[in-house]
Length: 182
Image 1 (tube, rainbow, N blue to C red):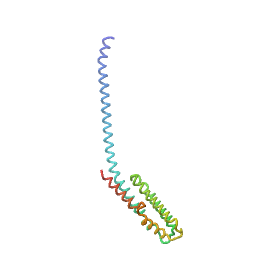
Image 2: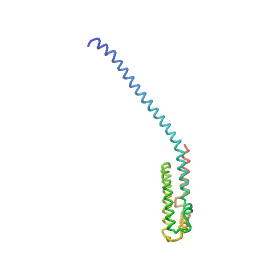
Image 3: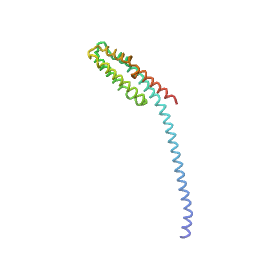
Image 4: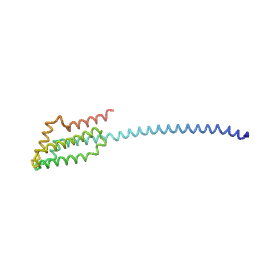
């Protein structure tokens, strides 16, 4: 090896080594900076999402509280029943009204907890079964008010054994309260 080649190798090799180390350090530092910025951005987006999501969730809980009021047996019967209805006509009208109200509010489940939604669904199913049960041994041509009366009496006699609108609304209130307990 001649002197010139040796001189070039000894001069260039440290420069290449220092350049490689510098490049690796810049790459590592850049990666760390990008990661820090990503974390900060996620944090900021999370805070923004919470700010925007809380009003939407509150509206969902409000809507479901209104839904539960409208689905209480007494309120549902009061709104649905008319003097000339038969028991069978009232039964069908109650179930149709319940289904329509439920379908109108079904998207609210996105903003409610799973437990709250399951409680609402269980109440609705329970009420449907009570309507079916109370109408089962009633003459279909009997006056509709007889079915309404039986449903309300069922709730009075079995208030400890059925899900009530008050229980569901209380659950919704507790969950709203927990949204603000941070």
